[in-house]
Image 1 (cartoon, rainbow, N blue to C red):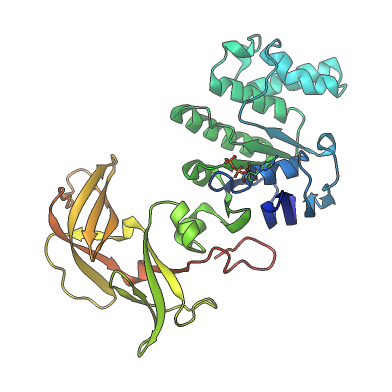
Image 2 (cartoon, rainbow, N blue to C red; image 1 turned 45 degrees about the vertical axis):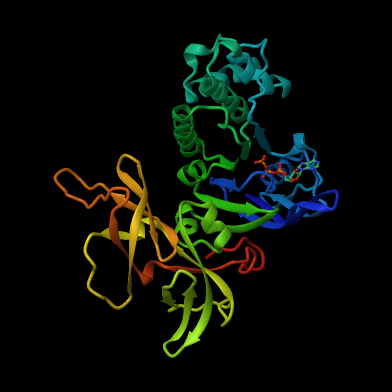
Length: 374
Ligand SMILES: Nc1ncnc2c1ncn2[C@@H]1O[C@H](COP(=O)(O)OP(=O)(O)OP(=O)(O)O)[C@@H](O)[C@H]1O
C-alpha cells in the first residue's frame, strides 16, 4: 500500500531520514517507533507530501507519489493538536471536507451520520469543540479524516495529550475502526507500549535509519541488535566477546557466564564484541543453591530493589558485579511463589537457551531493501 524506496531527507548536512526502505501493507496498523529526533515525523511528513525527499521514491498502491502535492494524495494526516475548527460544531467539522469537495447535501448528511455513529458522538453532533473532552476531540478529528475515505491515515502522536485511560480507549476504538473499514493506519509514536499493543507491525528507528521492522512479538523476542533490545521492553544486556573454544563458538560475558552459540549468524566472528540479551521474565529466583545442570547458569546475589507491579514484582539483584532485572509472577490464588525482600541473599538462575547474542552495531543485519528482520 505505502512504500518507501531508499528515501533520504537532509536538513543541512545531517540526514534526518537516511536511505529508508519500508513496505506497509493494505489494512495494516503500522507504527514508526523510536526516540525523539530519530526521523519518524519527517518520514510521515514525506508520505503526506509536506516534505519532499532529497533521494528515493514513495509509492502509494504502486503509484509514484514522490512529487505529488499533499491534496492529490489519497491519504490523510492527523496531528497531535487535532486542528478542529472552533466556530463549527462537531457535525459541521466532520462535513467540512465533503462540502469543499462538492458532495451533494444528501450524501454529506448520510455520510456524516454514519461517521458520527462510528465514533459514537451522535449525542454531541451540535457541540462546539471547546465543550468536548480531549478524547472526544480526537474522535472528531478521526471522523473528519475518515469521511473522505483515505486509503491511508497517518497519525502523528495522536494520543500524546490524552491521559492513560483515554489513550487506552482511543487505541481500542482505532482497532475497531480498522476492523470495520479496513483503512491502513500509520502511527508515529515514541511510546513503545502504545506501539506494541496496537500495531500489526512496528518499525524501530534510530538516527534516521530503520533498525528493525516486524511484528511486536518478533521485535521483543528476537531484537536485531543491542539498540532495539534496549529500546523495546526491559532487558539484561551483558557485554561480551565471541570466542571459539573446544566446544564451538561461545559468548564470553564480562559478568562471567559463557554462553554457547548454537545457531551462528554471518556477523558472529571470533573476537567480535557482542551483547547478550536476557529478558527479566527468564530469570528465576530461589533461596537454596540449585543443583548444577548443563545449560543452566546459577549466580549468588543480593536483592537491591523490588518494585510491586500488581501481577508481578520486578527485582533488581546484584550478582557477578552487576545488577540484574528479574520479573517474578505472583501466581494465582493459593499458589505460594518465592517473593524475596530487599537485602535477601538468593540464587539467580537462567537457561542458556533464553540468552540471545546480539550484534552491538545497529546496522549490521538489514537485508537489502527492508529494515532488519530477524
Ligand atoms: N524543518 C526542519 N529543519 C531542520 N531540521 C529539522 C526539521 N525537521 C526536523 N528536523 C531535524 O530532523 C531530525 C528528525 O526530526 P523528526 O521530527 O523527524 O524526529 P522525530 O523522531 O519525529 O522526533 P519527535 O519524537 O521528537 O517528534 C531532528 O534532528 C530534527 O531536529
